[in-house]
Length: 368
Image (cartoon, rainbow, N blue to C red; front, side, top):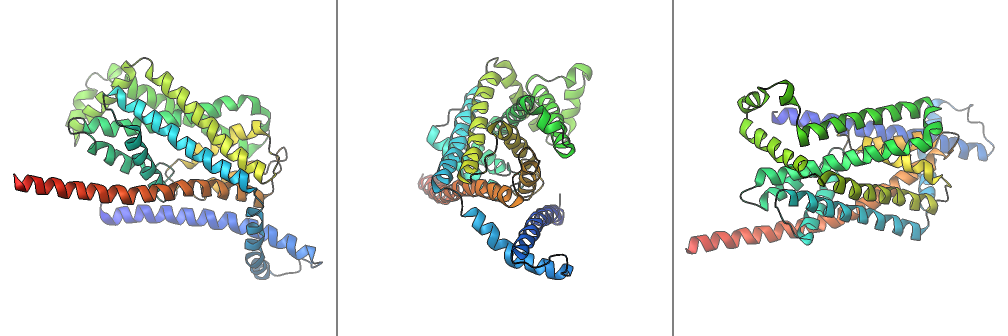
């Protein structure tokens, strides 16, 4: 893709993100402005549309800020700690993935790279954009298995997504009535099930193959593609995970633990905001939102995530006002940004240290 094409691709995603954020904020500000205006004894319907919007954007932000400041500080701190725990569990899982290829990365080094990746996830597309940088650093850790190191990042993300989709699918069972009595929730649920089916097929094809069974010459066609040898080596690297019989089970168990912690993060915030949401409902709503937000639609899933929280928590069985639902989403994102900031500090120190190491190596080579 040309530079102009890349700029256009990023630009339209940023435009979608901005549009979604403006939409959700405008809808909530109009509602808050209306309530505030009516509490003063005025008629909202008597106002012109432009006057309504002016009142909405002058009073709505204040009402939202007040909702955000209502969270219990202890609950906010607990949610931040839960967010950090999910990153650490991810580090453990990635090291498990690396070991399949005989790549042994220390916990500290793997944690550094993971926090840097989390930092870049804050502004790259979806909630997985930092994986590109993670793959770059993984490749730098080895001289003879660079392709395999990059593949581990793909496999780690694939297993994590498959586990989250599976978790959402399982938690639909106790929430069948909630999901399928509302058309909008049912549409989201069916979309998640379709994602689960597609992701499961991708896991199967990546780990155990299947295309070459029906198309014997598939590998030959792959070799003819641009970078065909690299692609074939990547496929072989993926097959190694299928040969390790216990790998997928171990990775899924660890991922399920991370999924539970993700829900606990939102439960802590819901408790801190005194929303009274059923934990059973959140155990299906949170993974659904995470999975859809991970799609590369907007930077860090912004706009998509906020609209989904407002949409899903508004049903009568849960009945969370839009302002509180948006507050919940923004506070959860704030917890993520806290660890992104930590990742930014790690990135700056990591970049400087690597630069100094490279300078030292170059001087040593020149001296020889």
